[in-house]
Length: 369
Image 1 (tube, rainbow, N blue to C red):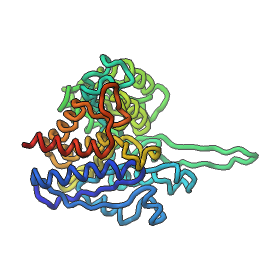
Image 2 (image 1 turned 45 degrees about the vertical axis):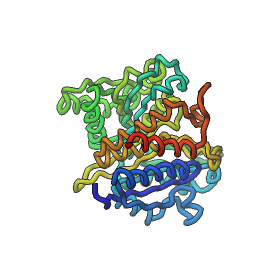
Image 3 (image 1 turned 180 degrees about the horizontal axis):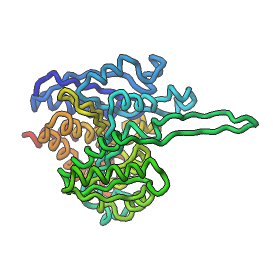
Image 4 (image 1 turned 90 degrees about the vertical axis):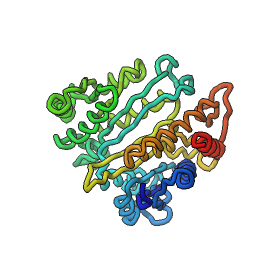
Protein backbone atom coordinates (compact mmCIF):
# COMPACT_ATOMS: atom_id res chain seq x y z
CA UNK A 1 0.00 0.00 0.00
CA UNK A 2 1.40 3.39 -0.94
CA UNK A 3 1.80 6.21 1.55
CA UNK A 4 -0.44 8.67 -0.27
CA UNK A 5 -3.77 7.39 1.08
CA UNK A 6 -5.33 10.39 2.78
CA UNK A 7 -6.76 9.81 6.25
CA UNK A 8 -8.55 12.65 8.07
CA UNK A 9 -8.97 12.46 11.85
CA UNK A 10 -11.87 14.43 13.33
CA UNK A 11 -11.71 13.79 17.10
CA UNK A 12 -14.58 16.16 17.98
CA UNK A 13 -15.83 16.63 21.54
CA UNK A 14 -16.05 14.86 24.88
CA UNK A 15 -14.30 11.50 24.83
CA UNK A 16 -13.78 11.74 21.06
CA UNK A 17 -10.19 13.04 21.31
CA UNK A 18 -9.35 10.35 23.90
CA UNK A 19 -10.47 7.39 21.79
CA UNK A 20 -9.03 8.86 18.58
CA UNK A 21 -5.69 9.18 20.40
CA UNK A 22 -5.72 5.42 20.96
CA UNK A 23 -6.23 4.82 17.25
CA UNK A 24 -3.44 7.29 16.46
CA UNK A 25 -1.08 5.09 18.45
CA UNK A 26 -2.23 2.06 16.48
CA UNK A 27 -1.69 3.92 13.20
CA UNK A 28 1.86 4.71 14.34
CA UNK A 29 2.38 1.06 15.25
CA UNK A 30 1.29 -0.10 11.79
CA UNK A 31 3.64 2.39 10.15
CA UNK A 32 6.56 1.09 12.21
CA UNK A 33 5.84 -2.64 12.19
CA UNK A 34 3.75 -3.29 9.06
CA UNK A 35 5.00 -0.58 6.69
CA UNK A 36 1.40 0.57 6.44
CA UNK A 37 1.37 4.35 6.28
CA UNK A 38 -1.20 7.05 5.67
CA UNK A 39 -1.07 10.74 4.89
CA UNK A 40 -2.73 11.73 8.17
CA UNK A 41 -4.26 15.14 8.87
CA UNK A 42 -6.53 16.34 11.66
CA UNK A 43 -9.36 18.85 11.89
CA UNK A 44 -11.92 20.35 14.26
CA UNK A 45 -15.59 19.43 14.16
CA UNK A 46 -18.64 19.86 16.36
CA UNK A 47 -18.40 21.92 19.51
CA UNK A 48 -14.61 22.16 19.25
CA UNK A 49 -14.98 23.81 15.85
CA UNK A 50 -17.78 26.08 17.09
CA UNK A 51 -15.60 27.37 19.93
CA UNK A 52 -12.81 28.34 17.53
CA UNK A 53 -14.61 29.21 14.30
CA UNK A 54 -18.21 29.95 15.28
CA UNK A 55 -19.42 27.05 13.12
CA UNK A 56 -19.45 23.33 13.81
CA UNK A 57 -18.06 22.45 10.37
CA UNK A 58 -15.93 24.86 8.36
CA UNK A 59 -15.79 24.80 4.56
CA UNK A 60 -12.10 23.90 4.82
CA UNK A 61 -12.75 20.85 7.02
CA UNK A 62 -15.58 19.74 4.75
CA UNK A 63 -13.26 20.04 1.73
CA UNK A 64 -10.61 17.98 3.54
CA UNK A 65 -13.20 15.30 4.28
CA UNK A 66 -14.36 15.24 0.66
CA UNK A 67 -10.75 14.81 -0.51
CA UNK A 68 -9.82 12.11 2.03
CA UNK A 69 -9.79 8.41 1.22
CA UNK A 70 -11.31 7.82 4.66
CA UNK A 71 -12.39 9.89 7.66
CA UNK A 72 -12.08 8.67 11.26
CA UNK A 73 -14.60 10.51 13.42
CA UNK A 74 -14.66 10.58 17.24
CA UNK A 75 -17.79 12.06 18.79
CA UNK A 76 -19.55 15.42 18.98
CA UNK A 77 -21.89 17.39 21.18
CA UNK A 78 -22.55 17.99 24.84
CA UNK A 79 -24.68 20.12 27.17
CA UNK A 80 -22.32 23.04 26.69
CA UNK A 81 -23.93 23.69 23.31
CA UNK A 82 -27.54 22.79 24.11
CA UNK A 83 -28.71 26.40 24.03
CA UNK A 84 -27.14 27.59 20.78
CA UNK A 85 -29.18 27.96 17.59
CA UNK A 86 -30.43 24.60 16.29
CA UNK A 87 -28.69 25.11 12.95
CA UNK A 88 -25.36 25.43 14.76
CA UNK A 89 -25.68 22.43 17.06
CA UNK A 90 -22.67 20.07 16.88
CA UNK A 91 -24.85 17.22 15.61
CA UNK A 92 -25.66 19.21 12.47
CA UNK A 93 -21.99 18.95 11.47
CA UNK A 94 -22.21 15.17 11.25
CA UNK A 95 -25.43 15.31 9.27
CA UNK A 96 -23.82 17.74 6.84
CA UNK A 97 -20.75 15.54 6.44
CA UNK A 98 -22.93 12.54 5.66
CA UNK A 99 -25.01 14.52 3.17
CA UNK A 100 -22.18 16.31 1.37
CA UNK A 101 -20.01 13.17 1.19
CA UNK A 102 -22.98 11.16 -0.09
CA UNK A 103 -22.67 8.59 2.70
CA UNK A 104 -25.94 6.80 2.15
CA UNK A 105 -25.14 3.39 3.71
CA UNK A 106 -24.32 3.06 7.40
CA UNK A 107 -22.93 -0.32 8.45
CA UNK A 108 -23.27 -1.13 12.13
CA UNK A 109 -22.06 -4.55 13.24
CA UNK A 110 -23.19 -5.96 16.58
CA UNK A 111 -20.72 -8.64 17.63
CA UNK A 112 -20.51 -10.14 21.10
CA UNK A 113 -16.97 -11.00 22.13
CA UNK A 114 -17.02 -14.37 23.95
CA UNK A 115 -15.45 -12.76 27.02
CA UNK A 116 -18.28 -10.23 27.22
CA UNK A 117 -21.34 -12.43 26.90
CA UNK A 118 -21.98 -11.85 30.61
CA UNK A 119 -21.72 -8.06 30.20
CA UNK A 120 -24.88 -7.82 28.12
CA UNK A 121 -28.12 -6.81 29.79
CA UNK A 122 -29.62 -9.97 28.28
CA UNK A 123 -28.99 -13.54 29.38
CA UNK A 124 -25.66 -14.89 28.06
CA UNK A 125 -27.34 -17.70 26.16
CA UNK A 126 -29.33 -15.14 24.14
CA UNK A 127 -26.31 -13.12 22.99
CA UNK A 128 -23.37 -15.52 23.07
CA UNK A 129 -22.09 -15.86 19.51
CA UNK A 130 -24.12 -12.90 18.21
CA UNK A 131 -22.72 -11.54 14.93
CA UNK A 132 -25.14 -9.38 12.99
CA UNK A 133 -24.92 -6.36 10.71
CA UNK A 134 -27.41 -3.49 10.54
CA UNK A 135 -27.41 -1.46 7.33
CA UNK A 136 -29.03 1.92 7.91
CA UNK A 137 -30.00 4.29 5.10
CA UNK A 138 -28.25 7.51 6.04
CA UNK A 139 -29.00 10.46 3.78
CA UNK A 140 -32.74 10.28 3.20
CA UNK A 141 -35.91 9.77 5.19
CA UNK A 142 -37.34 11.98 7.88
CA UNK A 143 -34.01 13.49 8.95
CA UNK A 144 -33.61 15.22 5.61
CA UNK A 145 -37.12 15.44 4.15
CA UNK A 146 -38.68 18.78 3.25
CA UNK A 147 -40.74 20.65 4.29
CA UNK A 148 -39.69 20.71 7.92
CA UNK A 149 -39.76 23.24 10.72
CA UNK A 150 -41.73 24.81 13.55
CA UNK A 151 -44.45 27.35 12.78
CA UNK A 152 -46.54 29.67 14.89
CA UNK A 153 -50.25 28.97 14.48
CA UNK A 154 -51.29 31.86 16.69
CA UNK A 155 -53.23 31.90 19.94
CA UNK A 156 -50.28 30.29 21.74
CA UNK A 157 -50.23 27.26 19.46
CA UNK A 158 -47.22 26.04 17.51
CA UNK A 159 -46.76 23.14 15.09
CA UNK A 160 -43.62 21.10 14.50
CA UNK A 161 -43.43 19.07 11.30
CA UNK A 162 -41.05 16.81 9.37
CA UNK A 163 -41.40 14.94 6.11
CA UNK A 164 -40.69 11.23 5.69
CA UNK A 165 -39.98 10.40 2.06
CA UNK A 166 -37.97 7.92 0.02
CA UNK A 167 -37.40 7.50 -3.70
CA UNK A 168 -36.86 4.29 -5.59
CA UNK A 169 -33.23 5.26 -6.23
CA UNK A 170 -32.52 5.87 -2.55
CA UNK A 171 -34.03 2.52 -1.59
CA UNK A 172 -32.29 0.48 -4.28
CA UNK A 173 -28.78 1.81 -3.65
CA UNK A 174 -28.83 1.00 0.06
CA UNK A 175 -30.64 -2.25 -0.70
CA UNK A 176 -27.81 -3.37 -2.97
CA UNK A 177 -25.25 -2.70 -0.24
CA UNK A 178 -27.26 -4.85 2.17
CA UNK A 179 -27.80 -7.67 -0.32
CA UNK A 180 -24.09 -7.71 -1.22
CA UNK A 181 -23.17 -7.99 2.45
CA UNK A 182 -25.69 -10.80 2.89
CA UNK A 183 -24.09 -12.68 0.00
CA UNK A 184 -20.75 -12.59 1.82
CA UNK A 185 -22.29 -13.76 5.10
CA UNK A 186 -25.18 -16.17 5.70
CA UNK A 187 -27.28 -15.12 2.67
CA UNK A 188 -30.11 -13.86 4.88
CA UNK A 189 -31.47 -10.31 4.82
CA UNK A 190 -34.27 -8.85 6.94
CA UNK A 191 -35.74 -5.57 5.68
CA UNK A 192 -37.41 -3.49 8.39
CA UNK A 193 -40.16 -0.95 7.70
CA UNK A 194 -43.51 0.30 8.96
CA UNK A 195 -45.43 -0.48 5.80
CA UNK A 196 -48.71 -1.03 7.62
CA UNK A 197 -49.08 2.70 8.37
CA UNK A 198 -46.46 4.62 6.33
CA UNK A 199 -46.75 4.78 2.55
CA UNK A 200 -43.09 5.78 2.22
CA UNK A 201 -42.04 2.51 3.81
CA UNK A 202 -44.65 0.54 1.90
CA UNK A 203 -42.70 1.71 -1.14
CA UNK A 204 -39.52 0.60 0.69
CA UNK A 205 -40.93 -2.94 1.11
CA UNK A 206 -42.13 -3.16 -2.48
CA UNK A 207 -38.79 -2.00 -3.93
CA UNK A 208 -36.75 -4.30 -1.66
CA UNK A 209 -38.93 -7.22 -2.73
CA UNK A 210 -38.47 -6.48 -6.42
CA UNK A 211 -34.71 -5.95 -6.00
CA UNK A 212 -34.26 -9.26 -4.22
CA UNK A 213 -36.26 -11.23 -6.76
CA UNK A 214 -34.53 -9.63 -9.76
CA UNK A 215 -30.88 -9.32 -8.69
CA UNK A 216 -30.37 -11.46 -5.58
CA UNK A 217 -32.40 -14.66 -5.83
CA UNK A 218 -29.75 -16.45 -3.76
CA UNK A 219 -30.47 -14.29 -0.69
CA UNK A 220 -33.36 -15.16 1.60
CA UNK A 221 -35.26 -11.88 2.04
CA UNK A 222 -37.72 -11.40 4.88
CA UNK A 223 -39.65 -8.33 6.03
CA UNK A 224 -40.43 -7.17 9.55
CA UNK A 225 -42.27 -4.18 11.02
CA UNK A 226 -40.03 -1.85 13.06
CA UNK A 227 -41.83 -2.30 16.37
CA UNK A 228 -41.63 -6.08 16.04
CA UNK A 229 -37.96 -5.83 15.07
CA UNK A 230 -37.22 -3.93 18.28
CA UNK A 231 -38.94 -6.64 20.28
CA UNK A 232 -37.20 -9.45 18.40
CA UNK A 233 -33.77 -7.89 18.96
CA UNK A 234 -34.17 -8.37 22.69
CA UNK A 235 -36.13 -11.63 22.46
CA UNK A 236 -33.98 -13.60 20.01
CA UNK A 237 -31.24 -11.45 18.45
CA UNK A 238 -29.36 -14.35 16.86
CA UNK A 239 -32.22 -14.89 14.40
CA UNK A 240 -30.78 -11.94 12.43
CA UNK A 241 -27.77 -11.89 10.13
CA UNK A 242 -28.06 -8.71 8.02
CA UNK A 243 -30.79 -6.15 8.65
CA UNK A 244 -31.52 -3.17 6.37
CA UNK A 245 -33.80 -0.30 7.29
CA UNK A 246 -34.57 3.40 7.03
CA UNK A 247 -32.64 6.27 8.54
CA UNK A 248 -34.75 6.77 11.66
CA UNK A 249 -35.47 3.09 12.35
CA UNK A 250 -31.79 2.29 11.82
CA UNK A 251 -30.79 5.00 14.27
CA UNK A 252 -32.99 3.47 16.96
CA UNK A 253 -32.48 -0.24 16.28
CA UNK A 254 -28.69 -0.02 15.99
CA UNK A 255 -28.47 1.54 19.45
CA UNK A 256 -30.65 -1.26 20.76
CA UNK A 257 -28.31 -3.78 19.12
CA UNK A 258 -25.34 -2.01 20.68
CA UNK A 259 -26.57 -2.80 24.17
CA UNK A 260 -26.77 -6.48 23.28
CA UNK A 261 -22.97 -6.37 23.08
CA UNK A 262 -22.64 -4.99 26.61
CA UNK A 263 -22.06 -1.30 25.95
CA UNK A 264 -22.39 1.44 23.36
CA UNK A 265 -18.63 1.64 23.72
CA UNK A 266 -18.35 -1.66 21.89
CA UNK A 267 -20.05 -0.80 18.61
CA UNK A 268 -18.18 0.62 15.57
CA UNK A 269 -19.71 1.81 12.32
CA UNK A 270 -18.89 2.60 8.71
CA UNK A 271 -20.70 5.08 6.48
CA UNK A 272 -20.12 4.53 2.77
CA UNK A 273 -20.98 6.40 -0.41
CA UNK A 274 -21.15 5.46 -4.06
CA UNK A 275 -17.97 4.47 -5.89
CA UNK A 276 -16.68 7.11 -8.28
CA UNK A 277 -13.43 6.85 -10.23
CA UNK A 278 -12.39 3.87 -8.14
CA UNK A 279 -12.91 5.69 -4.82
CA UNK A 280 -15.66 5.16 -2.25
CA UNK A 281 -16.25 8.08 0.17
CA UNK A 282 -16.18 6.72 3.72
CA UNK A 283 -16.48 7.87 7.31
CA UNK A 284 -15.87 5.59 10.28
CA UNK A 285 -17.08 6.33 13.80
CA UNK A 286 -18.00 4.63 17.07
CA UNK A 287 -21.72 4.60 17.79
CA UNK A 288 -21.27 5.92 21.32
CA UNK A 289 -21.73 9.63 21.94
CA UNK A 290 -19.37 12.20 23.39
CA UNK A 291 -20.07 11.09 26.99
CA UNK A 292 -19.26 14.51 28.51
CA UNK A 293 -19.73 13.13 32.04
CA UNK A 294 -16.54 11.08 31.74
CA UNK A 295 -14.60 13.26 29.28
CA UNK A 296 -11.07 13.97 30.44
CA UNK A 297 -11.23 11.34 33.19
CA UNK A 298 -9.31 8.61 31.31
CA UNK A 299 -12.35 6.32 31.57
CA UNK A 300 -13.51 6.03 27.94
CA UNK A 301 -13.78 2.65 26.26
CA UNK A 302 -11.73 2.75 23.02
CA UNK A 303 -12.95 -0.61 21.65
CA UNK A 304 -15.62 0.88 19.34
CA UNK A 305 -13.10 3.35 17.93
CA UNK A 306 -10.62 0.53 17.35
CA UNK A 307 -13.38 -1.44 15.66
CA UNK A 308 -14.12 1.54 13.43
CA UNK A 309 -10.43 1.67 12.45
CA UNK A 310 -10.58 -2.06 11.68
CA UNK A 311 -13.62 -1.48 9.48
CA UNK A 312 -11.71 1.28 7.69
CA UNK A 313 -8.86 -1.12 6.92
CA UNK A 314 -11.37 -3.70 5.73
CA UNK A 315 -13.82 -1.66 3.66
CA UNK A 316 -11.80 1.31 2.39
CA UNK A 317 -8.43 -0.33 1.80
CA UNK A 318 -9.18 -4.08 1.50
CA UNK A 319 -6.56 -4.84 4.17
CA UNK A 320 -8.29 -7.90 5.62
CA UNK A 321 -5.21 -9.31 7.37
CA UNK A 322 -4.45 -6.01 9.10
CA UNK A 323 -8.09 -5.58 10.12
CA UNK A 324 -8.08 -9.12 11.54
CA UNK A 325 -4.94 -8.26 13.51
CA UNK A 326 -6.66 -5.32 15.21
CA UNK A 327 -9.75 -7.39 15.98
CA UNK A 328 -7.62 -10.23 17.36
CA UNK A 329 -5.64 -7.87 19.60
CA UNK A 330 -8.83 -6.42 21.08
CA UNK A 331 -10.35 -9.87 21.56
CA UNK A 332 -7.25 -11.16 23.34
CA UNK A 333 -7.22 -8.17 25.71
CA UNK A 334 -10.83 -8.79 26.65
CA UNK A 335 -10.15 -12.51 27.06
CA UNK A 336 -7.33 -11.51 29.40
CA UNK A 337 -9.79 -9.75 31.69
CA UNK A 338 -9.14 -6.05 31.08
CA UNK A 339 -12.28 -3.92 31.29
CA UNK A 340 -13.09 -0.23 31.14
CA UNK A 341 -15.75 0.97 33.57
CA UNK A 342 -18.67 0.62 31.15
CA UNK A 343 -18.11 -3.13 30.67
CA UNK A 344 -16.72 -3.95 34.10
CA UNK A 345 -17.52 -7.42 35.41
CA UNK A 346 -16.92 -9.08 38.74
CA UNK A 347 -13.48 -10.63 38.96
CA UNK A 348 -12.06 -8.61 36.06
CA UNK A 349 -9.48 -5.81 36.07
CA UNK A 350 -10.92 -2.31 35.78
CA UNK A 351 -8.52 -0.16 33.75
CA UNK A 352 -8.29 3.32 32.28
CA UNK A 353 -8.33 4.35 28.63
CA UNK A 354 -4.56 4.82 28.68
CA UNK A 355 -3.94 1.37 30.18
CA UNK A 356 -6.24 -0.15 27.55
CA UNK A 357 -4.26 1.72 24.90
CA UNK A 358 -0.98 0.34 26.23
CA UNK A 359 -2.48 -3.15 26.27
CA UNK A 360 -3.54 -2.91 22.62
CA UNK A 361 -0.04 -1.91 21.53
CA UNK A 362 1.47 -4.67 23.65
CA UNK A 363 -0.88 -7.26 22.18
CA UNK A 364 -0.10 -6.12 18.63
CA UNK A 365 3.59 -6.57 19.47
CA UNK A 366 2.91 -10.13 20.65
CA UNK A 367 0.81 -11.06 17.65
CA UNK A 368 3.38 -9.77 15.17
CA UNK A 369 6.41 -11.30 16.90
